[in-house]
Image (cartoon, rainbow, N blue to C red; front, side, top):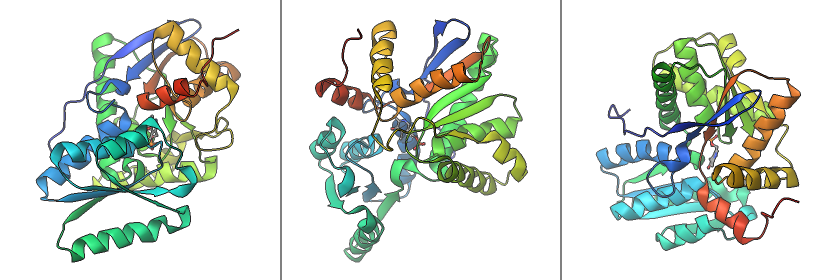
Length: 319
Ligand SMILES: *Cc1c(COP(=O)(O)O)cnc(C)c1O
């Protein structure tokens, strides 16, 4: 694993102060390809790609995938051929998918059941042709993705030290799980008391939580760090109350939340990830009677998806 760490410090600001103080960490402002957690993770994968003499990249994701847009952008900037395997079932055109095409990525749309074998086939064919392809798991899954958010946790601790503050809660949109896994690994290694809560954007509790736990175990094992299993389970909070009909679906309440956040704070969120998670966080806070706490929301990005929502007139003035 690479030792060099990209400098990626993003601002944290207090956005609202009522019964709780809500802060937001602006990972959407990471300065490459509209930022987001996928830009943070991809910078780690591309260090390995640059160092390892790879000559092409293969990855996986839907047409609304922020990960695929960032990877395609990093590839074109290096003149590396990029192949994206994409499930037919979620292939509606979006600004992200338009950018993937603009960046020259080769997009293979196949039924979701054929994704695995297509990836294997593409990698094998490339190797037979003498290429040395690098595969990145969907969403930047893998220990390097976890590493990116382990390092982000260190950034948060540094902020706490210089600002003399302690975040009692950290909320984030949780999908393929390594963003949450990295943060929880940081918490476990430093043995810190706070609740990190992943708001699921698609998966149900049992599956989603297990994927986060597996990523934590894999990362800690790789780093030779020993943490008892019950501590890992205790620290992994995965809430599936806000998934609606699953990936990409969202309620009117999420739309209203996005509109309000944009109007009040000038911060764009989206229907698939951050808007859903921010709405979920506010609801979770009120249902659980949480008050007098410092709460950090990680804005994981997805700015192009904000424009999809705006473009399709799904964001409306509030009554
Ligand atoms: C992918 C994504 C997430 C989820 O991150 P995971 O590491 O896959 O759990 C959250 N927010 C945005 C904007 C994303 O693109």
